[in-house]
Length: 145
Image (cartoon, rainbow, N blue to C red; front, side, top):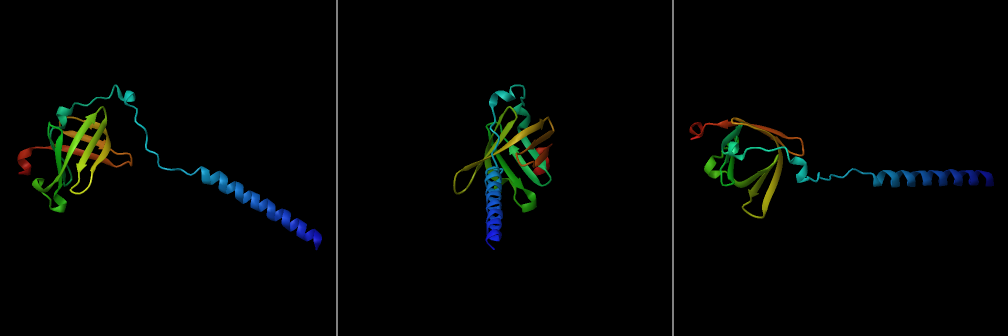
């Protein structure tokens, strides 16, 4: 019986060390969300003309009106929201970093960043860090009124 308990304790000790090593090794290697740090000097050659952004843009029932003073408004016809009831925001476009600053009724200004992919006379395409892609087409303002 004495030999049995020695073997049993050795096996138990080896298992305990194995479990400890497993948890220490894999617990420290968890993947946490760390947003990419954007270095401005990396985007020297990417430039978009902000004048092309001015106007009304549409994606399905979602609309944005960008003004040349950096202000904008967004509304969604599928939610039965018209332009005068829309959410006010400001925007910036630096190289390919397109940022919306939403003005909340209660609380702070909330920024949302996008990576501009295409900005032409009638097509705008950008995506965010979560892989959500948006493709807008420019709308004649007379069609909305």
